[in-house]
Length: 158
Image 1: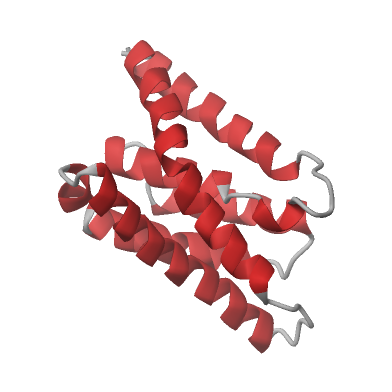
Image 2 (image 1 turned 60 degrees about the horizontal axis):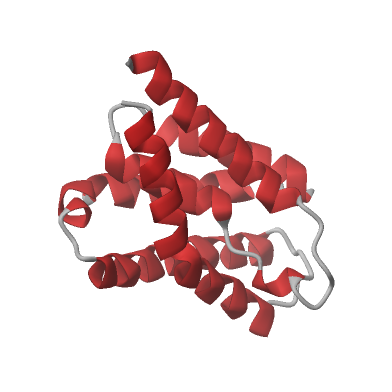
């Protein structure tokens, strides 16, 4: 049972990284959801004893490497995101889907703000205009579908 759950976590995380680096047309790349962050959020709320801040940090470091961004940028943002999620995971667990979407919107806003802030500190010339907001809202919009897929995977692993 434990191996199957760990395998489900590993497979879903690998698949979320694959979706993160999959090529998209230029006009659609601004709307790419944060699949890794959504997956980390799901597992933090579902099995907080197995997925924690350390896993989020490691995934953030891998995201930094894949994006070629400032090393530690995504790691910091995902660590803060996961800490806040773990702090409130018992409350988030009983939310309806609409309340969960609002909580996810707020948490993703913190995540994206930390990315924006670290870009400013690192003197990165990145234009966060509409594409930044589009990615945030695309992540929230895809959440009901993504959570259904991950719930199916989690149920089969038990």
